[in-house]
Image 1 (cartoon, rainbow, N blue to C red):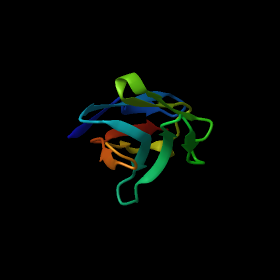
Image 2: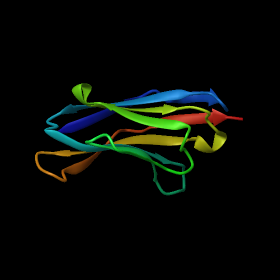
Image 3: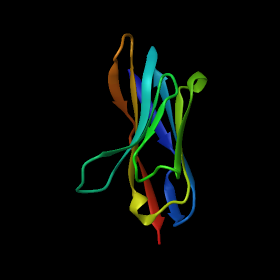
Image 4: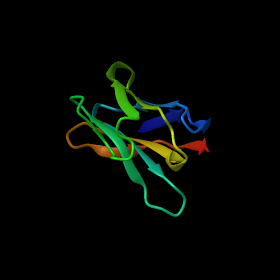
Length: 119
């Protein structure tokens, strides 16, 4: 059983910064990819950023240049540094790990953390 625990959400003014963390525990075996998603009530969950096992990163166009995803393999943790936050970044943010004994593994999700950006 793999569990993901998120932290770091909160309320911030526009232009401010937050750093989200997501740590995995349990029978992880290998982590193939990590990512962050966000969801606004009534809308579909969207991809924010992802990082592969080899360290390749991808970002949604809306966050490029403002958000940075990183990982600490020794701690089984992924981070999302969010700078220059905008009100439209307000959402519940979820971390995702693709992990398992063999590739491609399966998806595991964090519980979600609320990020609210005030104007």
